[in-house]
Length: 341
Length: 274
Picture 1: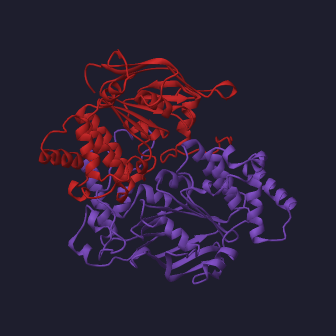
Picture 2: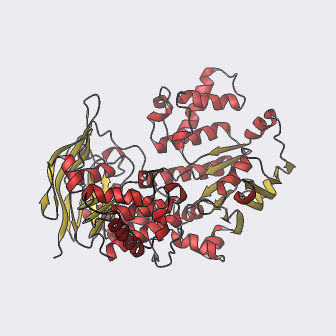
Picture 3: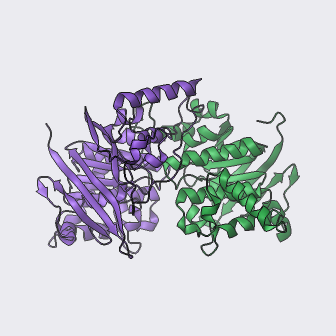
């Protein structure tokens, strides 16, 4: 039994818009991250992946509001804490967050080393410049960043390099969990691979104890994380080990997602890509019953009425659909046979 | 694929130099390419390899420093504004960022009506224009009735990119340059966009120049693949040959950089560079 680093129980959060409408962006999400493990969160744009990340950090600045549930980091319950306190005592030291456009966080008029000094001084006002420099160079050495980077301005670095620099800065205080929210979406495949290698290095070299990786690129998720959670309309619809989630998805939505994978491997050229028709429901006014019913190929009348709970089926797997496991597998099997003909 | 392979667009020694003196960079370096009618041609390379510069020269948005472009066997002449407009009836583009491809102040029906006017149907009765527009929208799985009174920013990224394809469907150019059309939208909408591009090729016989950094996408859509490194084509041919049996080290690296699901993705080959 390994140590639990982050535990989220039944967390809900909402946005309150200018017109006082509620947008339920995180709907009763529970998850656990153990030491040395990484968790992937997949889903299409607008399903609440990034909001979930912010909520997990306790980063409740308006318009985001905490509704219910608890967040436990390393044995410490931070739910309901003042977001300003969270920022001072939790972010950076317990949880670090890398947003998609992390590279835009760099100040164009200041050198990278000044940026690092700021980060340190925000947490420890008595640290000296020499100490920071020593720590930063040590950190760069381990992470494969050239030391010259520290003395450069952000404009002198390429996109991939900036992203890696920001990642290095974000783990400089040795957080327990790193939440990487689409860290490589804005980069080309070559820089993406460098970023991924660096994230893996962070885990191996003990800079971070565990990682949550958010992306819509499934092949990437498959290669980076141990477990995958699929998110749809603010809810978790499937939870499984990476291999099972990709090759044996149960929920019809995950099944659709896996059908959109494109990789340069033989045989995939002839596969017809499947895409899911329609658009996700409006989270201001979520429909009753299953959220996916509108777009589901296998929809049944009762789907639109009954609320479906995330059903645990053992082996670390869970999914949210009223159709039993065996029946779903039968349906997929038949469909595959039909397609083959 | 058509039986006769007609060359629709070709370049001879096309080059583009940015800057001068010590700052001089050769973005596109004496490129020769023959693009056949009705094919999807992919141009693959990492950022900064000159893909977009090359595309912009084909579109006539950038002036080549050296070399010629031949359109349907004749030297392209776009020196006057009128001739340029005439040329743009034949070649159109979809760009990477759908959010910045529209005029924020123009409603969606205005965008589409503009296309109808551009292709020379400006004088047909309004009812028929509506018919054209709904046909184009249904081609890309959008509902015209829901869109008419909306502004582009009210749509999602995927919908915007689909509307871009609806524009192309209305304009019906001979060549479409798709410059990373899927890199800013998520994986599920990506399949839809790619399928629509292939539908354009299959149903209308449009020639598509597909520019991407993701070799997986190129493998999925293209009839022929060109690999670009530092402004030069280093390898080209059929996707099965180039992508499954790459000869050049550069191509091999591009392929190894894409995450795989059936083979192991080898991270040890990564070299950090600045």
